[in-house]
Image (cartoon, rainbow over all chains, first blue to last red; front, side, top):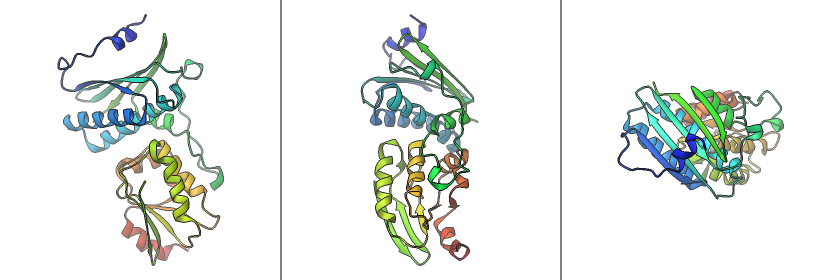
Length: 158
Length: 114
């Protein structure tokens, strides 16, 4: 068993973490996503992170969690998502874990922009999520570990 | 999903009275936009001044609302928040829609739009 899985199933010890860190376990649903985004916003406001960087973080987090809800858990509403936020002076570090389906070929989708230089009827209505994520993060990694998906990423906050 | 339509001399303004256009409301938004825009002649301006956040599903729904218009109809956008504008810019959808900084600017621009 890899260390990530051990830490994921260990109980969360409230009050023992530094104030700029948060651990959450939420259901893989719209409400769960909403809770994570609200907690992230509060954490970044408390750390006096500028509005633009808060917005960037919200975009990345929303896309990542929506992907997990819709793809890893196939929109069933079953399953949980674990999130760890760590805000430093210059960066947001995030670890997101789920127990859903692996990504295709056990790899993170690459950064591919949908073409908008097309006729109106051919304009893309999806496929923006991973592009936005790759565009806004500083570093990102994905691992399939036992039956868990683990994504870690960092974003610059200044 | 609350959409408020108002007829002005310069066109129809559809205001989104929600803070977010995201995955949970995307399909409803598209359906309500169809009802709001059906048979409308002239300009259609989507006022996003109350919207803080649009995710990729919301962006897809706005594109879908544009694609479901009749061939002669167009969709313009007004008053995007910094975060919403960034989503449009990064995905290059800012090249697809006419985007006005404010609703007033959209109103003033009517003379330039044939």
